[in-house]
Image (tube, rainbow, N blue to C red; front, top):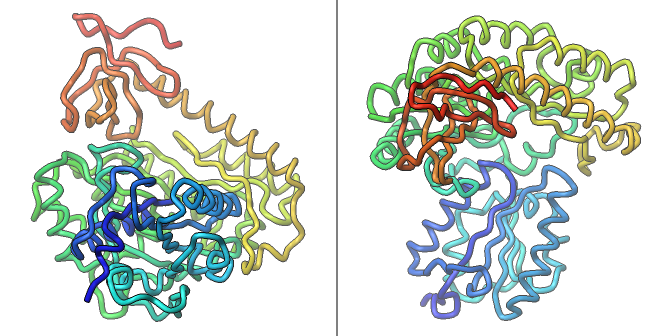
Length: 440
């Protein structure tokens, strides 16, 4: 006997990264497979699944606020909390009003069975995440409201132990989607989309399980050979996983977006050691400069952290100077946030005022670098995929373009760049195709 009559409509709300979105898409598919119907709005759902993030304290607070809001708007709805926060602190979530189930990442694949089976006596289902071998993923075909660039998670978990990061303890060990499965998924997506984004918690570790001889570059070659996908884009890859082989493939193959995102975190040697990162600034610089030499027009981005515990003024200046010297075209700048259970949380903390000030300095540096990069594109013709957002496109080198005239979404087009927009580019508007003089 199932209980689909009690849980007729469901709503899945995802928090955080692309991997969480991919998990959520798989959950939706599994729930639908049990005969449940997706609700158009959260307030209409009998079951609300909150698929959580726990990377920062702000992410945790966002989840708690949402639980309270869901319970207020529909006290009869059954709330199931899953994901990374659920894995890290299940009792904390189970104590909140309205929460019926807390299911960790360790048992996420069992959710569809759980909510449609006999009544569940006890609302916490969390186990050893390091024993997890299942790979849960489905293409995210509406990432951040963009219905033209689906995101496909092909790797999960992380074997690193960065001192600031809780993710290995809520996601488990690195594990890869089988190559044949990835090929089938990309082949299916390529029938409907021009660009597919490959993602993972530690994407560059795809294929690194014991006994595997394939690496990420080998998988990409297989996808290019066995699917008609017009453009593949890699999300974030750790710097030392940008091998010469992978960079060379990206440089030579026009069907791969010229887009390198390599997390840096800090340009200070001492801080990188304290973070337990597996490279030093000189190693990072070698990879990034090689990428720039092989792909002169590529987008090159990084994640950078401001205010790591123990970061002195001298450390920050060393990091800022290193970033200034690198050929970055954009940065994702984060203010350090303590995560209970991580070594960094027990270190001497940088005052929040100082953290935020350093964040501002790095953001201003990033904006200046991005503007220089965008200005260098004026007069060029760039390949771009038209977006679901009216009149916008995204270039292979990760720049938003305001189109001069409407084009059908989900098409790869050549766009002549005439000037700058606020944070992006504008297509030329003159019929002769001449660049616009204004770059404001």
